[in-house]
Image (cartoon, rainbow, N blue to C red; front, side, top):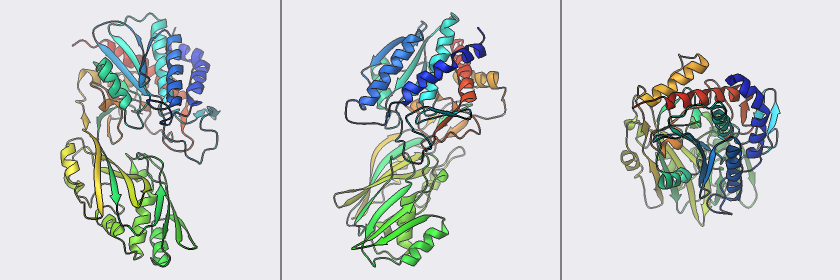
Length: 449
């Protein structure tokens, strides 16, 4: 059967499988180990779906699972994830009910990354149904913790080892040959005059709203509003026993902070501009301000010819009398975590930055056999030989396992609202994904080294 005919014949089944996966809110939870009861349920559903398509399923301690076909000494890995970020508000439909409208499917996870998981299943189903002569084993590995640390794939590697060739359909076509390094840290502010503050949903998204309380008369309200007006940022200010402030920003992925508006940064800089006398706002203005690339911290010195640093402050909350702020940094591919963390040593008696985790950058030669095979698959299916591969700031499973890059699932010029409201997936793009994954598996299968 021709590939396109197979996809058309299976499209409604694809939608039904995706509907099952989207129906579960798979945000990380500690209600059941390792990543929450819904992540356990979604993995069970996905393993059943893979088995129905002829794959040999295995549950790896509910951290992840995989379906396998083929035989051989070498393994091709396809790594997708079933967990999602919080839905947030602003949706036009229920984020956990797959909704079809005007050629698009809507729901949390349809593009990041449940849709790609389903497309990969059907790519393998096609090859199995056509008795394709596999020279290598192929494993579709589905994790449940990509959005909050990728411990799922670390556990997989510990139990099952690395792959010999692979891709994770959790980025962009025609592929990502380099990923910035990552650093997660916590800002801790003691003795601040800010009485209460909270905002943000997750560390890897731009903080879209801040709610705070300060003493009446502690800042110049006109200057505060003027600063925010200058930057086209809205706020509400109400007075009672204390002054209550809400600042509204715009969410975006932490790897692209320029696509959002960070409510916390703007709140802090507006307070500073309004004369709020506080050790935290002074320190923050000195080292952060409205910077997106760590200029005040000195990160311009680490910029290379491929990538720059990005810094995002995502979740803000009170911890007793202290203020805690998550810091998510993506740093250039030609530097090291040690150089990056050294520049974060700006602590004083009231304010500190505590580094939690780091991941070194990822970089592949675009002429290597694996990258060449994937590039060729993209051109063969799409005819597009002009769009270059990318270097990105987002972190994918490729950092957690050897011999893997992000390849798909978003096409050039697509904007599927990943991590935002009304996340969507174009049905025609989804069908094209299946074609691409089939061709990629075939090309990787033919590599001889």
